[in-house]
Amino acid sequence: MQLKLFLPFLLFAPLLCRSTPAVSLSLDELLSRLAQSNKRRDALLAGYVGIRVYEASNGFTHSHAQMHVKVVFRNPSSKDLTVVSEDGSKVIRSRVFKPALSAEKEALRADLKQRSAISPENYEFTLVGEEDLRERHCYVLEARPRRKDKFLLRGRVWIDSVDYAVIRVQGELVKLPSFWTRKVEYARDYQKIGDFWLPMRDESVSQLLIFGRSTLSITYSDYQIEVRSAGGVAAGDVQLFKQR
Image (cartoon, rainbow, N blue to C red; front, side, top):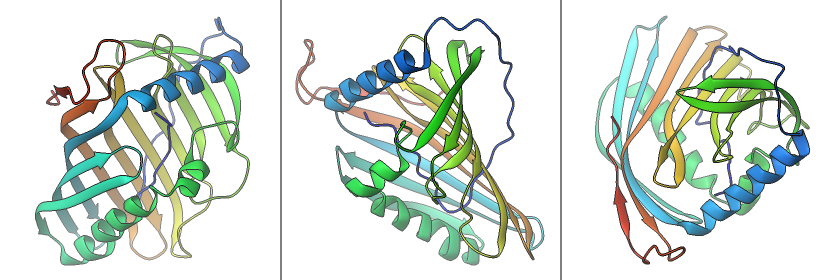
């Protein structure tokens, strides 16, 4: 499955990493294994159904909103996003949540997938060390964007040393979405479900010129995954998962 970074309007993350000098793979070998593993997973993934909870708040206006969304994804380019429930600030719901949903559907375009992919075409990587993250041993890469693009960030990427999958991305947007936005920090964590690594949680913080600090989180759960026929897995077989 091609790894892409989609940034839904507001974004977050503090940058912390315990780097160590013990690195057992070269950078080129690591990136090659990551690309091969992503391609294999993408070939197996037929689609999934899941639930998301969006939450956003602004301290200056003391506003808060929440929205529950059902997601039906068919690989490679079909995604239905259905709002199940929503409450709180109408401004946040109309100006943050709804544009985020629209932008995500647009991001399924092949050209935008390429622009946002975590790949050598979009980033210059440096292998800075290894560390354990959520009981998984990871290689840690420093990522520097090759261009100023709203889909790219400057930060770090954690790659699982067994599955060669991205399990965390963390950093700062290199191109701000508007004049009113002074800084956007972002983090996304992935969770393993069967043979796949799918989003678990996004967190973001935006520093706005007038309204100060705004936050957004997206929690992903209740995945139902459909896999294609390969390696003894029957076509249409559905693996069920509920986030713990």
